[in-house]
Every structure is written in structure tokens, then in C-alpha cells.
Image 1 (tube, rainbow, N blue to C red):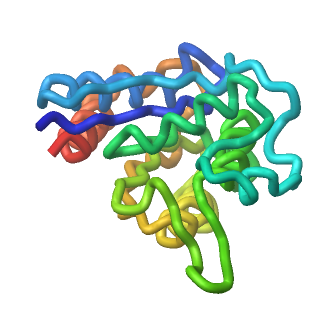
Image 2 (cartoon, rainbow, N blue to C red):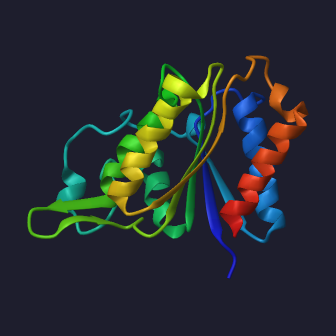
Amino acid sequence: MSKRIVIVHGAPRKKGNTRAVTRLAAEAARREGAVVTEIDVTKLAFSTPGCIGCAQCQQSDTYECTLGDELARSVATLAEYDVIVFSTPLYWWSYSAQLKMFIDRMYSLCKFSDEEGIRSVVSGKTLALIATAGGPMQDNLEVLESQLRNPAAMLGCSFASCLFPDVRMEAGDLKNDPLAAERAQAFGRLLAS
């Protein structure tokens, strides 16, 4: 059965380096037979940015944000996929603000209780990261990676990443870099396997 992969785009620049390498990974995954869906969080409509801490999702029997906007509906679909890929440039040692809103709403994908601990509808899936940065790995991209590796473990997900340090700011530069292209394509094949 084909892997179902969702790519959650958090990069605001449509022709930027993050989108370029993510496109290469997605194309490679599709060639391997994966079904790839893409969510562009920079275009989602929302009534309130991010999670408002109302905890209504914890009182509900469903695993979805009760705000009911496009952002909430998109987050609720994550349970349908085998692999969830976050694609983002590094902004101030973290992911983009647009992706942060999406990730914060993922609180609704869990139920927390003293008796049962944490239950998650994405447990057993793979959480993956594709990220670019203008600086090095150390004290930079590795900080971002840990910000997603730890929640992946809490959610019961395996974790994979494909990181591109020391990328110049010119939009789309990475698409002309054969080594970066091969790394992105290899990552796409890995996610599809």
C-alpha cells in the first residue's frame, strides 16, 4: 500500500529555497509511489492565530480544534497520513510564525489525562522536518530540529529530518545545487519507503 504523506509548508516565500528542496523531495516520493498532499499554512484562513488555550479540544470526544476554522480543519486531517512533513526556513532559531500557528493547534490531536497519560491520533506515524538556514547546524538548525524531535517523541511518532545549513538568501538558489537536490530527493524516497 502506498504511503500517504502530507507536507505542511511553512515557508512564506513561494520561490524560496525551502520550497525548492521540498518540491524535490515531494516529486521523489511521488515517483516511489507515495500519495503526497500539500497544505500551505501561509494561505490558511483562521479566526484566531494559533491555539488560544481554551482546552475545549480536551473536553471533546473528537481529536480536533473546536475553533472550527480552516486552520483547525487542516490540522484535523493529519491523522489520515502515514508521514507528516514540516517544511520551514529557520527564523530566529525556530520555525516560521505561520508554521507555529499550525503546530500549536496540534494540541487538539492529543488527549491528556492522569489515568491514561497521553493519547494521540498521530501515534505510530512519522514526523519529518525539511529546513533551510542561512547559518550552520551547530547552535542553529540543530535547535530547530530538537524543537520537533521532542514533540514527535511525546506524540509517539518516529522522527526524520533533512536539513540544509549555510544556504544563501537568494530565492531558489538550492534548486541549482546538485548535492542539495540529491539529498532532498533521497529524503523523499526515504519517506516513501
